[in-house]
Length: 318
Image 1 (spheres, rainbow, N blue to C red):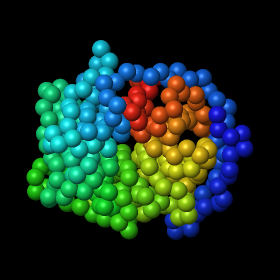
Image 2: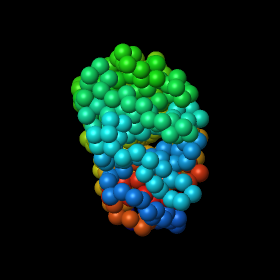
Image 3: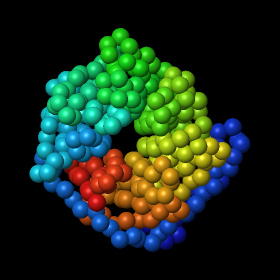
Image 4: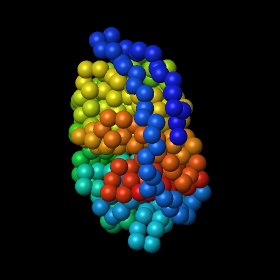
């Protein structure tokens, strides 16, 4: 349960000062929980989870890639795309889910054909070996636009499926780490950095800041559903929503919220974070949910089976 009288954030202003950011308290009534803990073959922290044409996949520490099949979660890759054991911090899938992309430490970038079981290494584009925190891909397998969020504040992108010599980069903000990136169209999406900024692109190349001044928290997750429908999760239990005109903030408590997933129609969703915290969204309110784990959760998947992954190889399912 969260505090029955959570601290309200003071009024904030969206960048440009054109719209007020209202602070709204989260609902504090605990909902029924159907989350269960799944067994996994790793104790490494899992940072990403996706659904593909060949089941659910999770990626994490030491370059591990897990697949959930009929017999539960099993390793399909150990050591990452280079085999050097670089940890993987983010993942995404192409249209129709045939290729799983993942990125991580020391410039690691991998493309895994989930049907053929083939792994292609795209690591260190242009000889860059910075840490990569997240990846977004659009288009069909083998023909994807690839966008990689860098720890150095750069976004690396390739419109030719990550082939060598096709990578470019842009620095949207001040050089603060780009923590998360998500796209709702082939070249349209959003990214957040650790300096409290949200950026938008409509061409995959140029980025414009659309918020948030004076948020006073780090941003960790972003769900880009349209130019007028963006969700951001951050420190201090904060969730932010942009409707194309203004930002609205909800304070759920104290947990750092690492990821947020909301349906495209905004009818439902959830956010996850430290200490096994999960908050469900019912279209109006965020409701605290009891979970059977106190592990820090890192990534969420809104699918036929909802999945949250995190520290110690934790996988929660419902």
